[in-house]
Length: 220
Image (tube, rainbow, N blue to C red; front, top):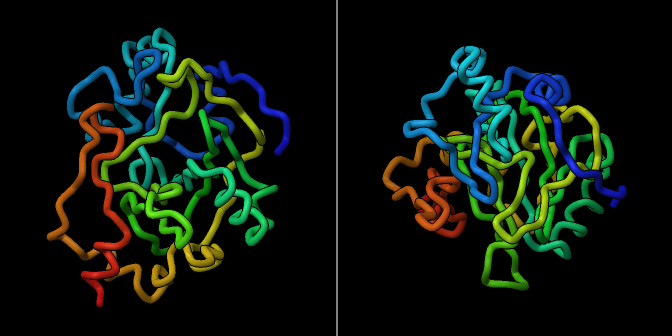
């Protein structure tokens, strides 16, 4: 990895780095959920109001709504660094996109072109029953971009580059998303009977998350 740098970017600097009209969210220090209710309905236009900008400046953590509300900005979140390193080896484009580090792993940030799963999906690893990470493509979810993790460790900027524009089928998932290719995207997006899972301990950062195994079962 490139040596990480502490982040203390202003809202304007974050937007300049992301190159899209992303929906930024004010979050309390050490938390993963925004200060306001119904944050999923926030629009970019809402965030440009002076009072909202003051909140973004006042609170330690900054989150981002992913997917369509932020002009198709998404992240691939790896909690398992070993699985993450294997993914990087299969995808050399990683060196040309924005990367942030968290407590254990890292986030790769992309701007999607064309169809993609607009929800959060657990990645699948044959070596471990626990999900080593997540595809975070929208559906009412957020990712903390900068600030303080609840563990006391700060999110860091590992690679200061604009998010790369990417077509979903160009991502080499290996065995992490074995059936999640371009022909299956509409099937994934059309699954409406899977119960959303909310991480109540964190207050909504994972809302809209779909377990991959159940997704594949519904497709078969």
